[in-house]
Image (cartoon, rainbow, N blue to C red; front, side, top):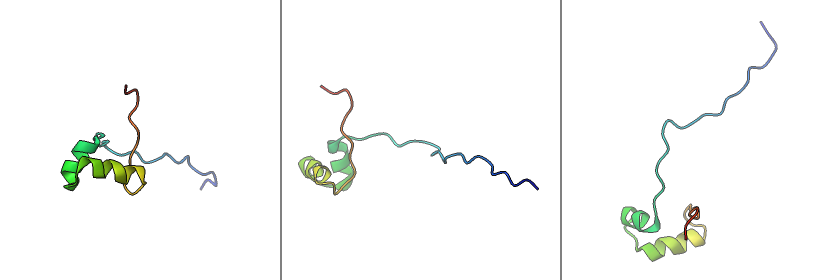
Length: 54
């Protein structure tokens, strides 16, 4: 029996969920999209800024 530790590989999700915008999230949550944006800015719901948007 070896005393060496085997390398640990991080768990990877089998499939990633697509990102949704505030209007899609609002429809899912049955909120107004501006309320979703407000909650995201306050840190009450998880959110990430869009990348390369102009």
